[in-house]
Image (cartoon, rainbow, N blue to C red; front, side, top):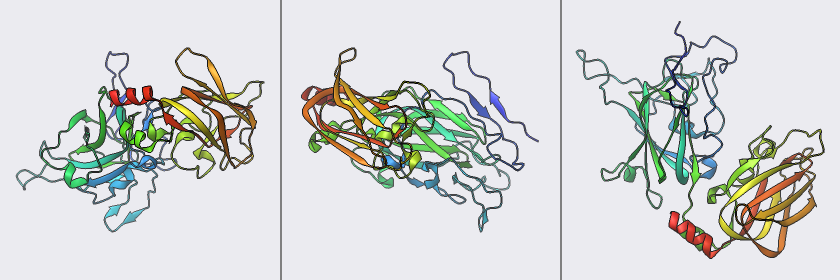
Length: 378
């Protein structure tokens, strides 16, 4: 029986764990018992390929066993050992057929043979890390993977991305991966990208793709809109820190749309002291906040009791009250028009004493200085 193995990390202190070889054949019970994974330093960042932001798998050269769209599903991959179809075992991922050589004298795939998928990032940005997850692909995962990126304006289709004049930048060189494992890759490239090309060498299956990074919005688009949500993830807002991430990520509070269930928001554990919980946000850039919306959708017996907001313009500067401590209702949208515009680059939301918030919206406009900095960085 093959034994799972992990390659020895390099001497560098920031080397990421990596995995090689087959996982053990499924032996019953929880299929994730022997799943190989690690804590990667970039997974707190936004997933630029998230379908909630507009991410999509545009095309793939082969999806014989399992369709390409599975790559970006939000839930972790599921496994049903008895789920078979007319083409064979049905897997929760993207799986291609087995490649063959040119004939009986050369039955094996060529060194350059591979399958590919084209991914449109939901939010263009700087990629800091990629996870190619081969969960449940124990003996049918690719031998190696590689990832390239490009940046194009508009909304190009697959045919345009496949044109010979498109310039692709390698983010992850061809690298061996392991089966039934989260294969993570740190990316050191400061450019803004809109699309990726994922290659698997020579064939096989990948369960999920995650593309972690920092969203870089188009300043011309934000300027044309005028009033925007200055903290929205899709516009480039970020969660810098939070007091408690026990039940769910704080980033949920700035995801697009309304929460659709309780765990689609931010919920903290029950406090047994006299403190309170909080999230600190960084806005897309310096802006003037005019209105606030706080939603507690689906948080019925566990919504925050009260909320307060403060804002900071420059790091180290004074924090100014935006919203005094205010009572919240469960499962409700709360809207507040501010008496004056508040110039800010950071906002802190304090909840009392604990509980949950599903969404925070901070409506306003970029300042001239904020818009200029965005344009200079674009």
